Amino acid sequence: MSKFENNYCILARKYRPQSFSDLIGQDPMVKTLANAFKSGRIAQSYMLSGTRGIGKTTTARIIARSLNYKTADVDIPTVEFEGFGEHCQSIIQGNHVDVVELDAASHTSIDDVREIIEQMYYKPISARFKVYIMDEVQMLSTAAFNGLLKTLEEPPPHVKFIFATTEIRKVPITVLSRCQRFDLHRISIGNLIGLFTKILHQESIESDPESIAMIARASDGSVRDGLSLLDQAIARCGDKIEASTVRLMLALADRNRIMDLFGYLIKGDIVKALQEFSLQYDSGANPSVVLYGLADFTHLVTRIKYVPEMADTLLYSEAENLRASGYAKEVSVTVLSRFWQMILKGLSEIEGFSRPMEAVEMILIRLAHSVQLPSPEEIAHYIVEEKQKKKMIS
Image (cartoon, rainbow, N blue to C red; front, side):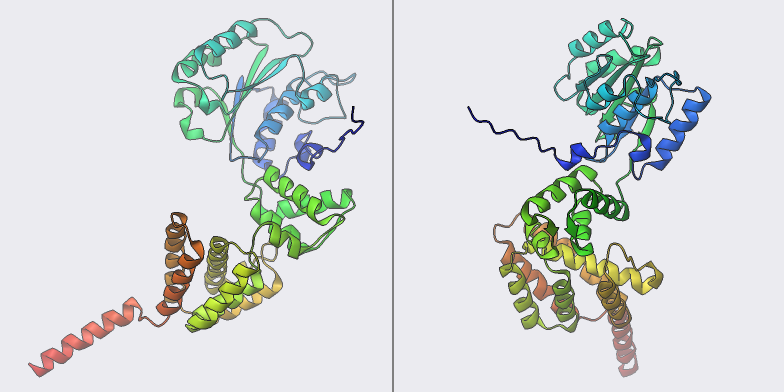
């Protein structure tokens, strides 16, 4: 028998928030709950909505901890924890007897709801409240939702419900109206960078700002996705995370080279643009990612053109902001708008094509050619002039 024991804990579990103070980017919800708990206005059910990986289940457990918080000095629901109480550890770990976690995706029928209704009339064994946490609640059947309505309106005083969903529009309005709803926000890139930097410091792992920014951007506002990518980066890089390795891991294009490619396109230099794209492709960049990079930089240039002070020092490096500022002075809004529309159309084109490199090359050729085209204003002016010339001749 092997004696190998894997005691490693992934970062998303190791650094899972255990209190409201640990949550990032959800201040409005925390403030609302704090006020409600202080005034004794505790709802009978809560609805947490938001995209994947932003902490819905974690938040549900923290709310359950707040409802059942008890120490030698504190015996009321509270959002302010003075250390771990009597029930805290088991609630956070998800194995408390009075905090029942259910996955609605696998408990969709009315029979599952009837079973919950039958059990909830029994008082909690050790905690103050019996709490039911139901994840992906939008997966319940219509009959199951209907079975919950009366219960949600008049639940037993010792029962609380906490629902979580990624698709709030699929939850019936009759259910939503019986819940206190909180929309959890995507975590900003700045907050993600701060979190990842703090975690790497605690893990004694070196990194550079560019690598952390790339992971934060790729996380799309999801802490869990970001920590999974950070785990992957650590596995690849060891004790020092480098931007070049992260770029390969994410199949990203070098942002400096994206700016070079943008420059060739603006000049209408098709040959150099195709050569640059080929070099990026050979270096491991995904063709669609190159297009996304061009869209991202086009957006930055356009934003700086109108509001120069909006240069983002967290999302973009100083060099990117400087080059974008230069292009903002040089390139017209007409060309930038045309680029944006053509890139978005190109992204939808390559989704259904089996050879994305060829598709992107054709898109780049169109982009470079479009720089030479007249603007709608110039065309309108030309038409007016031609009409006037014809009138004069006639």
